[in-house]
Length: 328
Ligand SMILES: [Zn+2]
Image 1 (cartoon, protein in one colour):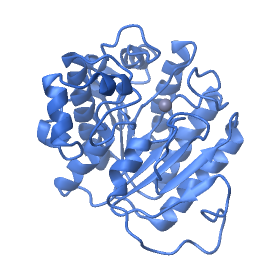
Image 2 (cartoon, rainbow, N blue to C red; image 1 turned 60 degrees about the vertical axis):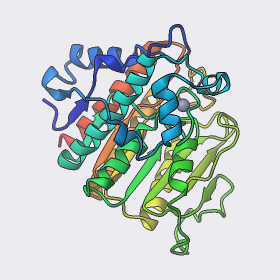
Image 3 (spheres, rainbow, N blue to C red; image 1 turned 180 degrees about the vertical axis):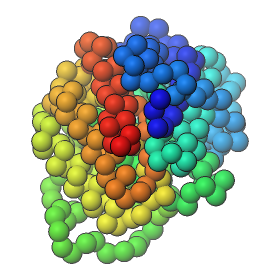
Image 4 (cartoon, protein in one colour; image 1 turned 135 degrees about the vertical axis):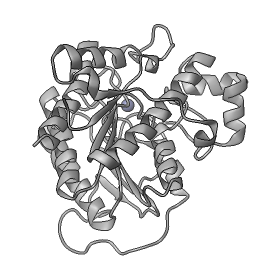
């Protein structure tokens, strides 16, 4: 039995037909975790869909109404890049419920993993890039509303920049403390690292610069990585970004968006991490969080490896990494 919970439902499946997004990956991760003995069925919790009230903590009433009545315009559906259906709406409400449940259990156990979610391209008033509802933002706002946390930090390691996250939490940005004067790296003075300051939610995104989204609204820290970066350089940048972020900000919860698409064989990514490098990435985030006693809620986000097997392995390894770091 794991010392933390995994959140999963068979209904996480996205009914989008033949698509580059492997909608069956959630079930395959669940099955592999059980088959390999990494987890057993008692480690899993089944979420309920988020309430409309929860969704409205992040999204506009107009957008929620369009989703609930099936009245997105053709352009809005095109921007979403997945075919609209009421079943798809249900799957996204459920993913948000999963991240809420994940956050609650992370606060109890130090970590929890939602075997889904991480839909970081959703904005308050529209969806894009396969993301209809920003489950992570919904979970953060719900924990704040319930007075379970005051502050949060998102650590987004998907290959694509977390534009929805940046936009949602930009409204809470304040002009605050000065930049650290010693110790590498100095934000803004290094060509790859851009930084601004956050209010109650501090956002970090490490992503490939030459990739979707074309417009990248500023996160608190953006690390714009060059094409083809490999394990060691990536891990050094991640270490830098986490150190910088945690020097400036003390979150009550870290929401780690563990995208599998920085993988070198990803169809929608141009970085060159190995499967082992991605596991080290997860370990690094978990060790930093554990050392500083900050709870972590994990979501899965993207993963488009040529072989779906590889995406499943990378996502399963996130659970293995958590077990290694938090099981001791
Ligand atoms: Zn992605």
